[in-house]
Image 1 (tube, rainbow, N blue to C red):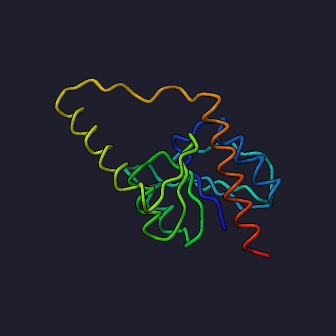
Image 2: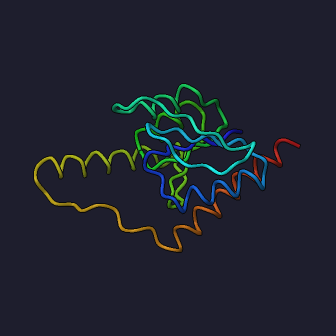
Length: 152
């Protein structure tokens, strides 16, 4: 399993959690963004910079991931592509996207997009809470543990 990070909009606190987990579990973690992202020195953490453009980083992640890889993203259409390709998708708030929930989440996203396009002010997401940070760390730990156990 590799961990791919949609790093363009990934919160700093999430990246810090990922960096610690990568070193602790010795899991290759690759950040992909259209700008340089500072990463700590580690043989398990890499940065890939792609050109600017709509969905360029997303497309690169989908191109590189293999079944069983984990992608960290809040981008719901990207999560749907990851699941379709046999990967796992986890958002920075700790919600695991699955085959069972991705369609309804995608439908809600599209509905909210339509509302915004018609002029309704929907506001953005709330700031990440401590419980969401913890939920992310816990879910990441569960996924890594499961992977390590399957590897034995």
